[in-house]
Length: 320
Image 1 (cartoon, rainbow, N blue to C red):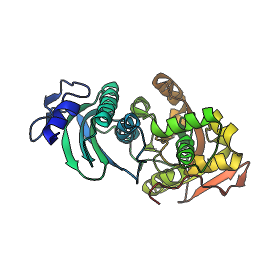
Image 2 (cartoon, rainbow, N blue to C red):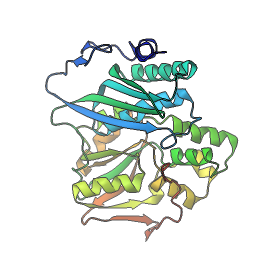
Image 3 (tube, rainbow, N blue to C red):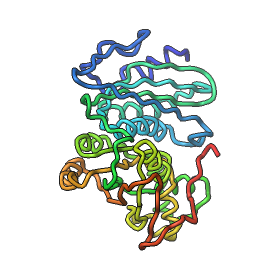
Image 4 (cartoon, rainbow, N blue to C red):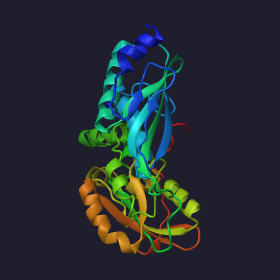
């Protein structure tokens, strides 16, 4: 099957149709019409086989996750997803795999209101590169550099499940069958917090998505904002499956350093705490207060009032 037949059969017309798309797949460029008084937020991620995903990862899961990791970046800036491009490299044409991948890609894009407007197909080692453009009201984008001394630190969802799921897939952890299914699902199907990000636009002083682990990603916020932080590790939100599958220190290790949760970490001034409860209730997402921004430039972890040093760092990047 030739390149253009692959595009026409599996990707043309996929995703959410949008009235702001003037010209889509099939020409040298796409044409879109951004809304007035909005900034364009642009994010791009590449997933490479044997670096970011195993060869036996289901095509459906890969189609979903390839979009979700980009949506999570947009969520962390409070942006509304709009248009995406796909560059896909394949060693050969597997029509069954492409059917499953493109159907999942289309379903996910449609759910989040994203139009596929272009891209590229090439032959080579399997990799997926997606660029998604979103829109955010001018001056309202969340960034990593607004945290101030005294702001409270929050995270959405639960932490560490995806990293434990990866370790189950790598046979580095053994858990009960139902728990294994849950952890693997959280690794394959993270939930980008798009609505929560938009709800935080006027409330949060900074935000980031948790792709590399809480310690690492919070560190990015502290560096950009030129502040420090104190985190109470007993406040970290853990799933019931995590609590019953591994010991406390192992669970905290995953929560602190496990990657690919794609939850949001954000800071909120004291004056906005009441409004936060209402805003995120409408977004339908759980959240937990885990610490506070401080002066200085260091991250301090406390447990029961004492300094805490993780003994288990749970997650190791796939590429290491």
